[in-house]
Length: 456
Image 1: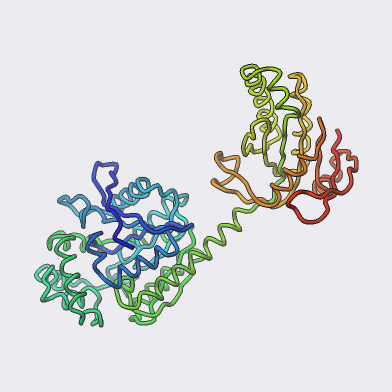
Image 2: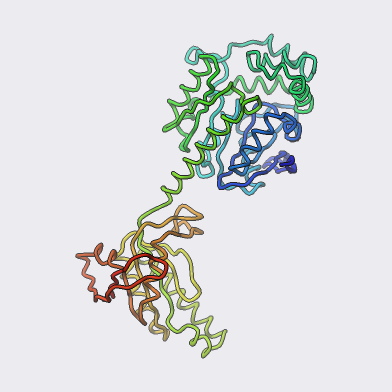
């Protein structure tokens, strides 16, 4: 996979934020990288680019440079989390991402948590790979102590290839095998030069140290993963445990490697735990999107012949009146219109008796128009697709229950409301009367199905 094209998203305050989109998958990952980045130079890190390609093998990935760094607009003041949250929203909008898993690395984890708490409707999941607070505090003893000398030294050697290994030790707090690789050090120094100036880096570092999102962790509703490396110090593990305790239902997973694994040798296991986590979230989403409902299909009897008799203009006018009657009655019986089917409707109800009574009312309501309808009802588990619920608008439904409802409706006669035995059994005591229509084979549905005609 070649490096993807860089594009720009405009923020609410008129800045351009550089972003890239690549990969294909059911889930979109928005990767919020650490304090500084440069979209195009990042691809020169061999292990990091391999990690990105691994993400792209199972997901659609969105990357961006935060404002003030890389290929995004620069300015004189380091941005706070609220401004960067606007950048994230702008990138999601520009890339056509309605909802995403947020992979937050280092200070990106705090941004991911804040966005998830503020915009739960746009957050599928959170992968929190950072700290809730950076600096040491009496109630946060595993935070980093103030070290202005280290920051001063970073400014001195910023972007200097000869000191890239020292720069790496200051950032990671340890010697890493990667720092012995001249190519890694070359790209590291180059990225530093292109991503930010020394003074900008120091300003970003100050904001990073002042960041504290501990109070908003309990407000994160999305499924959350906290990756924990097999190699790491006790303070880092304590920080991970702290976050896990404060986000309801958060999961931890140990991967082989060190912190910052996305950039380092051995990133494969880090990517695998992300893939497994998102697969479980997708499965859970599928289960949560399944609800028990009664589906109602209606259909105008002899619509083709009627249209030929009336002509297009008169038939359209008559069909519009039919649609208005049907919609009003679906709403009266607290149903949710899923879609119009041309000369009928698909609607869902959370009560089978109301679905049957709605069908009866539609049948009677369109008779003065000179129309007859057939209708079919079935109760079963349906899958919501494309929205929270059909009532919210724009959602479709799927699943075997929908197919059964359609097949039942197709077997109904003129002015008949035909229902499955499931509906009949569930409305016992409702006052509805049924006539046995015997067993039928429903096309594409296994086994015989006992059907009943519902009378008033």
